[in-house]
Image 1 (cartoon, one colour):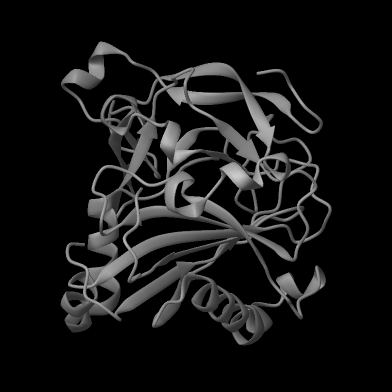
Image 2 (image 1 turned 180 degrees about the vertical axis):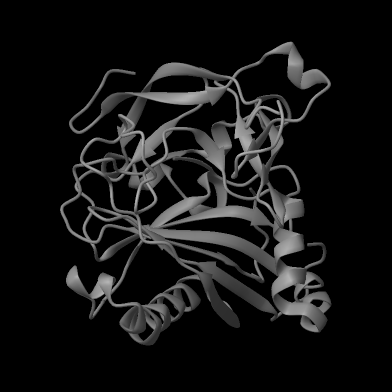
Length: 293
Protein backbone atom coordinates (compact mmCIF):
# COMPACT_ATOMS: atom_id res chain seq x y z
CA UNK A 1 0.00 0.00 0.00
CA UNK A 2 1.42 3.37 -1.02
CA UNK A 3 2.04 6.11 1.52
CA UNK A 4 -0.74 8.69 1.79
CA UNK A 5 -0.79 12.17 3.32
CA UNK A 6 0.53 12.07 6.86
CA UNK A 7 1.92 8.50 6.67
CA UNK A 8 5.49 8.16 7.93
CA UNK A 9 8.31 5.65 8.10
CA UNK A 10 10.02 5.28 11.47
CA UNK A 11 12.39 2.91 13.25
CA UNK A 12 10.70 0.73 15.88
CA UNK A 13 12.67 -1.63 18.09
CA UNK A 14 11.20 -5.14 18.36
CA UNK A 15 12.19 -8.13 20.45
CA UNK A 16 14.61 -10.36 18.55
CA UNK A 17 13.51 -13.89 17.64
CA UNK A 18 16.72 -15.13 19.24
CA UNK A 19 16.87 -18.79 20.31
CA UNK A 20 17.73 -17.61 23.82
CA UNK A 21 14.04 -16.95 24.45
CA UNK A 22 13.18 -20.59 23.89
CA UNK A 23 14.49 -21.25 27.39
CA UNK A 24 14.87 -17.84 29.06
CA UNK A 25 12.24 -15.15 29.64
CA UNK A 26 13.08 -11.58 28.61
CA UNK A 27 13.72 -9.35 31.63
CA UNK A 28 14.76 -5.80 32.49
CA UNK A 29 15.96 -4.63 35.90
CA UNK A 30 15.13 -1.08 36.99
CA UNK A 31 18.11 -0.91 39.31
CA UNK A 32 21.81 -1.73 39.15
CA UNK A 33 22.19 -5.37 40.23
CA UNK A 34 25.11 -6.67 42.28
CA UNK A 35 27.77 -8.88 40.76
CA UNK A 36 27.84 -9.79 37.09
CA UNK A 37 24.09 -10.10 36.45
CA UNK A 38 23.21 -8.12 33.29
CA UNK A 39 20.66 -5.37 33.81
CA UNK A 40 18.67 -6.85 30.90
CA UNK A 41 18.75 -9.80 28.51
CA UNK A 42 16.49 -8.11 25.98
CA UNK A 43 17.88 -8.23 22.44
CA UNK A 44 16.32 -5.67 20.10
CA UNK A 45 16.03 -5.58 16.32
CA UNK A 46 15.35 -2.25 14.62
CA UNK A 47 12.89 -2.27 11.73
CA UNK A 48 11.87 0.64 9.53
CA UNK A 49 8.08 0.53 9.87
CA UNK A 50 5.32 2.27 7.93
CA UNK A 51 2.99 4.08 10.35
CA UNK A 52 -0.30 5.21 8.85
CA UNK A 53 -2.14 8.41 9.67
CA UNK A 54 -5.26 7.02 11.38
CA UNK A 55 -7.25 10.12 10.40
CA UNK A 56 -7.59 8.51 6.95
CA UNK A 57 -8.73 5.15 8.34
CA UNK A 58 -11.53 5.90 10.83
CA UNK A 59 -14.00 3.54 9.14
CA UNK A 60 -11.61 0.57 9.32
CA UNK A 61 -10.39 1.11 12.89
CA UNK A 62 -12.96 -0.06 15.44
CA UNK A 63 -12.10 -0.42 19.13
CA UNK A 64 -13.58 -3.92 19.35
CA UNK A 65 -11.11 -5.23 16.78
CA UNK A 66 -8.10 -2.89 16.62
CA UNK A 67 -8.03 -2.18 20.38
CA UNK A 68 -7.74 1.62 20.29
CA UNK A 69 -9.87 4.69 19.61
CA UNK A 70 -9.87 8.50 19.83
CA UNK A 71 -12.13 10.18 22.38
CA UNK A 72 -12.85 13.90 22.74
CA UNK A 73 -12.14 15.48 26.15
CA UNK A 74 -13.41 18.87 27.26
CA UNK A 75 -10.60 19.75 29.69
CA UNK A 76 -10.00 22.71 32.01
CA UNK A 77 -6.26 21.97 32.13
CA UNK A 78 -3.62 24.19 30.55
CA UNK A 79 -0.02 23.24 29.80
CA UNK A 80 1.23 24.95 32.98
CA UNK A 81 -1.39 23.11 35.06
CA UNK A 82 0.43 19.83 34.50
CA UNK A 83 3.18 21.09 36.80
CA UNK A 84 0.60 21.32 39.60
CA UNK A 85 0.17 17.89 41.23
CA UNK A 86 -2.80 19.08 43.27
CA UNK A 87 -4.66 20.32 40.18
CA UNK A 88 -3.98 17.06 38.33
CA UNK A 89 -5.62 15.20 41.23
CA UNK A 90 -8.51 17.64 41.72
CA UNK A 91 -9.33 18.43 38.10
CA UNK A 92 -7.74 16.09 35.58
CA UNK A 93 -8.32 12.75 37.27
CA UNK A 94 -12.09 13.37 37.50
CA UNK A 95 -12.13 14.62 33.89
CA UNK A 96 -10.48 11.43 32.68
CA UNK A 97 -12.70 9.17 34.79
CA UNK A 98 -15.89 10.88 33.62
CA UNK A 99 -14.86 10.84 29.96
CA UNK A 100 -13.79 7.18 29.93
CA UNK A 101 -16.80 6.05 31.96
CA UNK A 102 -19.13 7.69 29.45
CA UNK A 103 -17.25 6.33 26.43
CA UNK A 104 -16.97 2.78 27.74
CA UNK A 105 -20.40 2.80 29.39
CA UNK A 106 -18.66 1.51 32.51
CA UNK A 107 -20.27 1.24 35.93
CA UNK A 108 -16.97 2.04 37.64
CA UNK A 109 -13.83 3.92 36.56
CA UNK A 110 -10.78 4.64 38.67
CA UNK A 111 -7.48 6.29 37.84
CA UNK A 112 -4.65 4.32 39.44
CA UNK A 113 -1.61 6.45 38.77
CA UNK A 114 -0.05 8.98 36.43
CA UNK A 115 3.36 9.94 35.08
CA UNK A 116 4.34 13.19 33.39
CA UNK A 117 6.76 12.69 30.48
CA UNK A 118 8.94 15.61 29.40
CA UNK A 119 11.29 14.83 26.54
CA UNK A 120 14.85 16.00 27.11
CA UNK A 121 16.19 18.01 24.19
CA UNK A 122 18.96 15.44 23.63
CA UNK A 123 16.69 12.37 23.67
CA UNK A 124 17.14 9.73 22.26
CA UNK A 125 20.84 10.55 22.65
CA UNK A 126 21.79 9.72 26.24
CA UNK A 127 23.32 12.47 28.36
CA UNK A 128 25.13 10.10 30.73
CA UNK A 129 22.98 11.40 33.60
CA UNK A 130 19.53 10.27 34.79
CA UNK A 131 16.68 12.17 33.17
CA UNK A 132 14.53 14.32 35.44
CA UNK A 133 11.37 13.11 33.64
CA UNK A 134 10.37 9.87 31.96
CA UNK A 135 11.16 9.82 28.24
CA UNK A 136 9.31 8.46 25.17
CA UNK A 137 9.65 4.77 24.28
CA UNK A 138 10.78 3.41 20.91
CA UNK A 139 10.21 -0.26 21.76
CA UNK A 140 7.12 -2.15 20.66
CA UNK A 141 5.41 -3.45 23.79
CA UNK A 142 2.20 -3.78 25.77
CA UNK A 143 2.48 -2.39 29.30
CA UNK A 144 0.72 -5.29 31.03
CA UNK A 145 0.01 -8.94 30.36
CA UNK A 146 -3.29 -10.52 31.36
CA UNK A 147 -1.64 -11.96 34.49
CA UNK A 148 -0.14 -8.60 35.39
CA UNK A 149 -3.58 -7.02 35.09
CA UNK A 150 -5.02 -9.57 37.49
CA UNK A 151 -2.17 -9.04 39.97
CA UNK A 152 -2.57 -5.27 39.81
CA UNK A 153 -6.29 -5.52 40.51
CA UNK A 154 -5.63 -7.78 43.50
CA UNK A 155 -2.94 -5.47 44.90
CA UNK A 156 -5.00 -2.31 44.38
CA UNK A 157 -8.39 -3.55 45.57
CA UNK A 158 -7.68 -6.23 48.17
CA UNK A 159 -10.98 -7.68 49.38
CA UNK A 160 -12.90 -6.06 46.49
CA UNK A 161 -10.70 -7.69 43.87
CA UNK A 162 -12.68 -10.94 43.59
CA UNK A 163 -15.86 -9.05 42.67
CA UNK A 164 -14.02 -7.07 40.00
CA UNK A 165 -12.34 -10.15 38.57
CA UNK A 166 -15.66 -12.02 38.45
CA UNK A 167 -17.05 -9.38 36.09
CA UNK A 168 -15.91 -7.97 32.74
CA UNK A 169 -12.84 -5.76 33.06
CA UNK A 170 -10.24 -4.12 30.87
CA UNK A 171 -6.91 -2.48 31.61
CA UNK A 172 -6.90 0.70 29.51
CA UNK A 173 -4.36 3.46 28.80
CA UNK A 174 -5.19 7.04 27.86
CA UNK A 175 -2.67 9.35 26.19
CA UNK A 176 -2.94 12.96 25.09
CA UNK A 177 -0.50 15.80 24.43
CA UNK A 178 0.06 18.53 26.97
CA UNK A 179 0.37 20.90 24.00
CA UNK A 180 -0.77 20.60 20.43
CA UNK A 181 -0.78 19.97 17.62
CA UNK A 182 1.66 17.18 18.43
CA UNK A 183 4.52 16.76 15.96
CA UNK A 184 7.28 15.43 18.26
CA UNK A 185 7.38 11.73 19.21
CA UNK A 186 3.68 10.88 18.74
CA UNK A 187 2.41 7.56 20.06
CA UNK A 188 2.00 4.72 17.55
CA UNK A 189 -0.34 1.73 17.79
CA UNK A 190 -0.46 -1.64 16.12
CA UNK A 191 -3.88 -2.85 15.00
CA UNK A 192 -4.55 -5.84 17.29
CA UNK A 193 -6.36 -7.61 14.44
CA UNK A 194 -3.06 -7.67 12.51
CA UNK A 195 -1.06 -9.25 15.36
CA UNK A 196 -0.41 -13.00 15.67
CA UNK A 197 -0.28 -12.98 19.47
CA UNK A 198 0.71 -16.66 19.74
CA UNK A 199 3.78 -16.31 17.51
CA UNK A 200 4.68 -12.61 17.60
CA UNK A 201 4.47 -11.78 21.32
CA UNK A 202 5.83 -13.14 24.58
CA UNK A 203 5.73 -12.13 28.24
CA UNK A 204 8.70 -10.36 29.78
CA UNK A 205 9.54 -9.30 33.34
CA UNK A 206 10.18 -5.76 34.53
CA UNK A 207 11.88 -6.00 37.93
CA UNK A 208 12.23 -3.29 40.56
CA UNK A 209 13.93 -3.68 43.94
CA UNK A 210 10.73 -4.55 45.80
CA UNK A 211 8.35 -5.73 43.09
CA UNK A 212 8.05 -7.03 39.55
CA UNK A 213 5.41 -7.14 36.83
CA UNK A 214 4.92 -8.72 33.43
CA UNK A 215 4.66 -6.82 30.18
CA UNK A 216 4.33 -8.12 26.62
CA UNK A 217 7.28 -8.00 24.23
CA UNK A 218 6.62 -7.90 20.48
CA UNK A 219 8.43 -9.51 17.55
CA UNK A 220 8.40 -7.87 14.13
CA UNK A 221 6.03 -9.23 11.50
CA UNK A 222 5.51 -7.45 8.16
CA UNK A 223 1.79 -8.24 8.40
CA UNK A 224 1.40 -5.90 11.39
CA UNK A 225 -0.39 -2.61 10.68
CA UNK A 226 0.74 0.47 12.59
CA UNK A 227 -1.07 3.82 13.03
CA UNK A 228 -0.64 7.19 14.75
CA UNK A 229 -2.81 10.28 15.21
CA UNK A 230 -1.26 13.04 13.14
CA UNK A 231 -1.20 16.49 14.78
CA UNK A 232 -2.93 15.19 17.91
CA UNK A 233 -4.52 17.89 20.09
CA UNK A 234 -4.74 17.96 23.92
CA UNK A 235 -8.50 17.43 23.62
CA UNK A 236 -8.01 14.18 21.66
CA UNK A 237 -7.54 11.22 24.00
CA UNK A 238 -6.02 8.07 22.58
CA UNK A 239 -7.54 5.18 24.50
CA UNK A 240 -6.08 1.69 24.08
CA UNK A 241 -6.35 -1.67 25.79
CA UNK A 242 -3.54 -3.36 27.71
CA UNK A 243 -5.42 -6.33 29.14
CA UNK A 244 -8.94 -7.71 28.87
CA UNK A 245 -10.80 -10.27 30.96
CA UNK A 246 -12.01 -11.93 27.79
CA UNK A 247 -8.57 -12.32 26.17
CA UNK A 248 -5.61 -13.89 27.93
CA UNK A 249 -3.31 -13.56 24.91
CA UNK A 250 -3.07 -9.82 24.24
CA UNK A 251 -4.72 -6.46 23.71
CA UNK A 252 -3.22 -3.61 21.69
CA UNK A 253 0.45 -3.37 20.81
CA UNK A 254 1.70 0.10 21.69
CA UNK A 255 5.05 1.74 21.06
CA UNK A 256 6.50 3.23 22.92
CA UNK A 257 -10.45 -11.99 34.43
CA UNK A 258 -12.65 -14.45 33.87
CA UNK A 259 -16.39 -14.14 33.52
CA UNK A 260 -18.83 -11.65 32.06
CA UNK A 261 -21.33 -10.56 34.68
CA UNK A 262 -24.13 -8.50 33.12
CA UNK A 263 -24.41 -4.83 34.10
CA UNK A 264 -21.08 -4.93 35.93
CA UNK A 265 -18.40 -2.77 34.29
CA UNK A 266 -15.19 -1.61 35.88
CA UNK A 267 -12.42 0.66 34.62
CA UNK A 268 -9.27 1.55 36.49
CA UNK A 269 -6.87 4.02 34.95
CA UNK A 270 -3.18 4.83 35.34
CA UNK A 271 -2.47 8.30 33.92
CA UNK A 272 0.92 9.06 32.44
CA UNK A 273 2.11 11.99 30.44
CA UNK A 274 4.89 13.61 28.52
CA UNK A 275 6.42 17.05 28.76
CA UNK A 276 6.21 18.32 25.29
CA UNK A 277 3.47 16.05 24.33
CA UNK A 278 1.93 13.22 26.25
CA UNK A 279 -0.31 12.41 29.16
CA UNK A 280 -1.21 8.76 29.55
CA UNK A 281 -3.82 7.08 31.61
CA UNK A 282 -4.15 3.37 32.25
CA UNK A 283 -7.09 1.47 33.57
CA UNK A 284 -9.40 -1.49 33.96
CA UNK A 285 -12.91 -1.74 32.60
CA UNK A 286 -15.73 -4.19 32.91
CA UNK A 287 -17.93 -4.06 29.83
CA UNK A 288 -21.23 -5.79 29.15
CA UNK A 289 -20.60 -6.31 25.47
CA UNK A 290 -18.27 -9.05 24.34
CA UNK A 291 -14.92 -7.63 23.22
CA UNK A 292 -11.98 -9.06 21.32
CA UNK A 293 -8.35 -8.28 22.10
